[in-house]
View 1 (cartoon, rainbow, N blue to C red):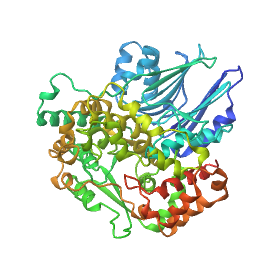
View 2 (cartoon, helix red, strand yellow):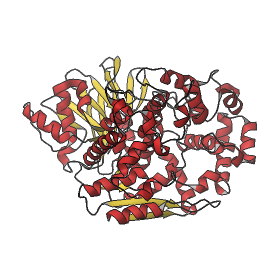
View 3 (cartoon, helix red, strand yellow):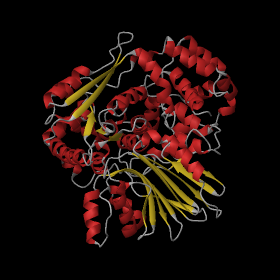
View 4 (cartoon, rainbow, N blue to C red):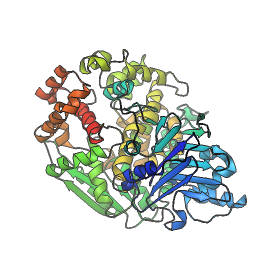
Length: 591
């Protein structure tokens, strides 16, 4: 829920109210239900509100607690806040609201920055200590809620979106060469703290940053996902793992029903979202609203999976909504979807989530979604070849990365070369970090803590919040993810991937859903990039702005324009769409 922003001045000047107001305005779709701003000397906080928990004005933000001398701007939801509230009342704290924001304030006062270790939820927040002038920024374990930063001498600004940072002004918008190399090679993922722009960074997930009044700061990582076996784990049967997973997933789904408004489900018809619906029905939910989206067929490829979502909706008696998107509407929505991206994201289903969210937001404010199950439970095709890998980093890169160094250097203009394979160096560093026992564990940990954060999770946040819709992701409940990380790789990868999760699903949903071929969010018109879509890409890359920027080799672009279907990445993505999307994103944000 919501969007947050703020400015810290270290020079003794007052925070810039106009800059904060511009950031708030840029995030108005994230929080259509209210806005607030407070300034206390050199610290200013701004907030756009989406009312989900405690709908009263007592929970308006930024929230101040004069008795404790604390201010907060918070985006997200702490699912275990009722339990924490009860504990804090037992310690003598008094509450003036009934929501989770005030619980964070009291928890911070009681336990300091380490309070985040007690939170089960998604969050990004800024807390200001009025007495000391200190500011604390924090982001949840899986980075479900974003937090972008811009620092210049004497000042720091932060916001939930990168475009909000740009709206404040005075940002170095030059391209970060290393980030560009990651974008082009690491499947469009730019690992934190970088973004594609030199002047904007992002707080890494599971990180607390403490900023003193003089601008000095320190960062602490408060959680890491350890993919190692506990004592006795190797002896557990598949049935034991199945039952343990199902128990934790039930808790995760139930936690994400905490709201003072109805909660629905984005139902693709795949195992993950179907399992969420089945578990909610098992818990006694009635009248559950579910939503599916489909697209026009292209080149003989079907653009929807309604047969599966219909099956689940009928089985569990949901209030089901099917949204069909004709091609004419799809191309018209692309500029809005690109503008909604905090960073350029190449997945075809961005526009699908954007259009789906637009329709869903007309009915409901909160949904659960199945993102994260593939990364946590081992659903992707690049995991099985790593079971016996002698060089896991290289084998992973061969399947996942879009380009090797030679290809990258021939595709980028020479002035944008970095001189080394940035993606490969990053993967090798991550695979060499302790805490993952096998090659598959290393890949799963990397995907769950880096790729997932800056691709599927960011996609869901950006596209849903563009329409004031909050998405909750139970498969990224950290307790469930910690359990999944302990499961031996062979069990996880059985049944074509996600074996233990599929075993759990068999106790809840029909076998037809589980044993079907793996599906993706199909957007055929974008996948094949011809006609009007090809012209859109050509126009962007041939524009004066693109030519002046000079990111790509002209010879490479001519090859792409001549035969876009011949130039696909190892993960079957369009190289032309990847480079065009980057240029369209830069132009959309006036960069």
